[in-house]
Length: 246
Length: 325
Ligand SMILES: Cc1cc2nc3c(=O)[nH]c(=O)nc-3n(C[C@H](O)[C@H](O)[C@H](O)COP(=O)(O)OP(=O)(O)OC[C@H]3O[C@@H](n4cnc5c(N)ncnc54)[C@H](O)[C@@H]3O)c2cc1C
Image 1 (cartoon, rainbow over the protein chains, first blue to last red):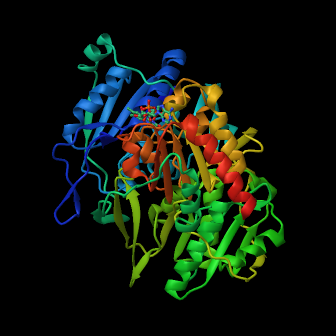
Image 2 (image 1 turned 90 degrees about the vertical axis):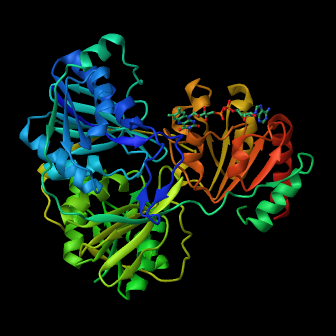
Image 3 (image 1 turned 90 degrees about the horizontal axis):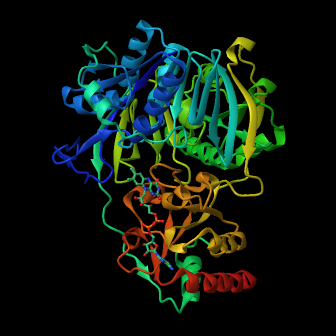
């Protein structure tokens, strides 16, 4: 089975977020970048597990600038066999999806596994877009994935529960928690990652569908109203009369 | 040209998130001086669909094909795109809920339409340019997105706005797009729904517990109040990780994102990864023994106190309140 895993580079969750150029640009100064958690913990690890059990190849693809090398090497250390970096500074999700779809069209994948969303723009777009570009089925918010004889059985989250679905490959899967257990790369993985192939390819041309024109930070921290623990009735009164939520 | 909202049905009823989306679509249509339409896939009663008129929908296109009862992103994309073409809709609206999150990006590709996911406000229009605000960096900031493509797609974050219901009634019209069996590629084998409980993402009130509750045997402190208030229950990741509570209750960056009207956090420290999943809630109440707990900085109301003392009192006071109202 040949599996493609797109990986994104995102600011670490604990990073302080700020903007420059009159709030039109994200300020990367002093920010630590990491592999997007759902890509790493669930999509990549599940892809590696499937390959280790059934044979095949796991390829990671990253659309971005050369400074992502460390993140790509980490993906190789976790267990991917080779990597492709599309050398571009992505402008929007549509651009990223188009690069991934172009690569996927040129190679014969059975499965593409993405994380459900990135923790920077939280937009849940790339997996769905790639599937439409390839005219493949896609299942999102996936918590379980097994593949047998070219058919995938998946559990996906729905409102208030889950649903079991079956789909013939090829398929795009958007992964979330429970799909796999995060892996810490071992020494052997880290050593071999250094020599695994990393191909750098130019981007295909894509039109721009959306743009971010400005950012803003929350105006001010909320001011909490403290209520004495011996006067709980006051909380009920405030929730009813002031906040009007009960 | 009109605004078209994708509306979902579950168990014969319009999903709450879709009512919000329809209202959002109607408000957008109002701003554009155009008509608000909806498209519904799968079987549903005409009476139920007509109620969309209460949130401003004039006409519902109903693709009542039973094969569409289950969500399959590929064929749903085909049908909704066909409805957008048939009605020449300029804007397609939908909810940023479970299915909307996958349907919208596919539609964006199929219709070559710029898409803004998870809007938190109504869009603004200037000529053929649309701008709209969304949350970014897991709730730590917001961004204004601009779309200049002729057709636009926008999904609205659940619980971002409260629909005001009027008295209208929508007309329902059959919609029969050209789809074949080959378009159906996802087969549903089974559904596992937590019955009798309120789905967390749809709940107006959520009572949530953390490690401060010391063990699963103490969860009655959470569930008793939740039952009394008609609320859903949630928990921190630390709690789900040690199996005190089921994983589907875990909220935060790696769990569910929720935006209820009221979120009550009991014995939860308020780590940034937890806040990422709940900081869109309208009102946050924090109950914690530690006055320095970071959650107090994100709260509207707080009680510094022991959950084992405060929660039984809260239950008692709420019962009194309920009896009086
Ligand atoms: C990458 C990453 C992703 C993560 N994703 C998530 C996520 O999605 N969701 C999530 O929740 N966490 C997530 N976490 C974990 C998060 O950082 C915290 O560790 C977790 O939220 C802590 O859970 P807690 O507040 O229940 O426990 P604790 O941090 O142990 O806090 C317990 C709180 O209870 C209070 N307390 C103790 N006794 C009482 C009492 N008797 N009455 C009242 N209060 C009491 C304490 O003062 C304390 O504030 C993530 C972490 C990482 C690194």
